[in-house]
Length: 140
Image (tube, rainbow, N blue to C red):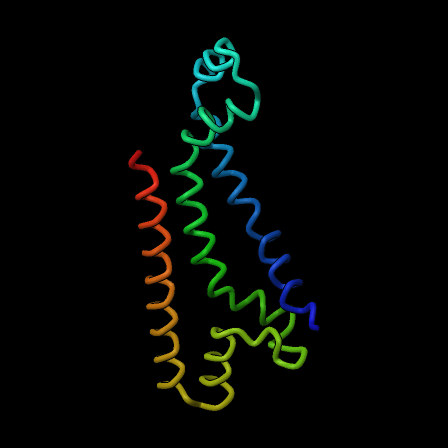
């Protein structure tokens, strides 16, 4: 069992935390304090205030930043290339690294370009499904 891929994932999460934190902080700063005060006056505890006041207010920001993180991390070529270069034993040889090797190691530029187009299409479909599911949940 290789721990290389989980290690790369953890480093990717760690590297993406600053922009996620700043975006969520900006969303939190736009939540009116009066709403929290009103919920507290109605007897809502901390978890209930979060669920009823804070989360609905920051949901659009969380949706946007999670979609952006998905796009950025799906093709995080540099991170995988620098950390493991596809090793050990090919456990971290992800599609973008495979396309890079096909183009620049083996000279198969057309094949690598086709792989890139397929990766863009896969990201677009997955992101469309994710956004459709998340946006349909907002219409309550």
